[in-house]
Picture 1 (cartoon, rainbow over the protein chains, first blue to last red):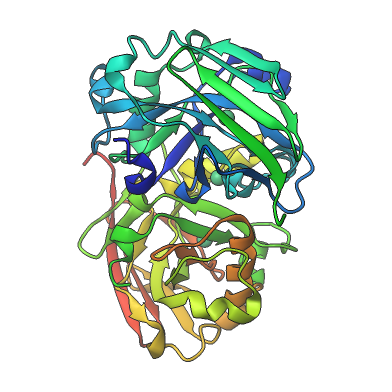
Picture 2 (cartoon, chains in turn cyan, red; picture 1 turned 180 degrees about the vertical axis):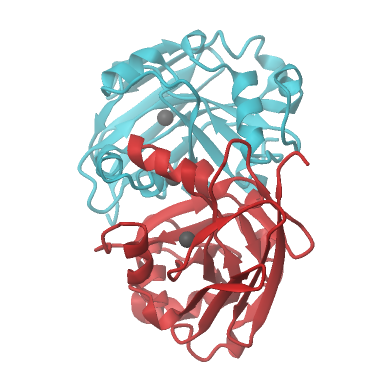
Length: 215
Length: 215
Ligand SMILES: [Mg+2]
Ligand SMILES: [Mg+2]
Ligand SMILES: [Mg+2]
């Protein structure tokens, strides 16, 4: 499934899946997963730049474990969920926080805030065999060499099997689809010229530069 | 582009693009397009049934003109926008209105409300050559033979070239992607056993039955 960027057709994001992150944005801890979508046109890989979209004055980084779906399924029971996982990625759920705040205030969709072009920088595919327990992985993010996020997937509110089961009740999952499992605390703004580095335990690391769109 | 269901990777919906529909749900007329995403896993074609998702008690019909994108583009100027259109579809933007109302009240994303499996029933592809002016087409929808929506795309607030240009500033458009251009007034609930018929001028008509999911 190393070609998830080409064959996958959706990216399902999970909001506020770490208590400390929900709190830092002044949000309640959710009682059910908060789901949003990013289009696959938002993917970039190392070597491409994160572009601040037109009008955005507060672009935030969110480092996340991404789950790569390996086969078609819906209404997947939690006990079978891991059979649908092909592997993992490290991803940044880049978020136009000002656009999202406006959307939240107006009761409008988050789609532009979460899904603008370049909003989903991703690592290479990591085969499932390399990850003993997806709910016991450290993940970190630095901006210009300063540590900003340093968490562990053990702090997720809803774990991987639960998320797969819950999401697949509403959205049929297909090979190459991605689930972004939420971000630990420490999110914050980046501006043009900043360099983001992030890592998932000793499995993979990524590096992306930020620039203004239209440059 | 008759294979848009297979090759397309996103469905961009436009909310409140007809004044009378914005008013009927108690919403302001927007000053810029309100965009949301439905995943391609939400497509169904005639012969498949619309399934009311688990927990939904108010599933609404919305009949819409869909624009089928023919080629890759971003930051498309309005004057060139029609070059990116391959054709059209008639689509239903089925909406779990109770889920959407909850999302709006909580400032949460609309993704499940708009994107659940079977939420995007579509017609066959209609080649662009058959449509002289996409902003001068009648569209109607009947539930159990009673007319519920009967509008014309001339009443859209944001026209097709403007939408393509606006959307492509944020989301790169690709061949097979769909833009759902919004619904005229007359939306309302359907329940299990109802039959929805809809038409786009004399170009195409579609018919879908509604059932509860899990039947
Ligand atoms: Mg996130
Ligand atoms: Mg949304
Ligand atoms: Mg609609």
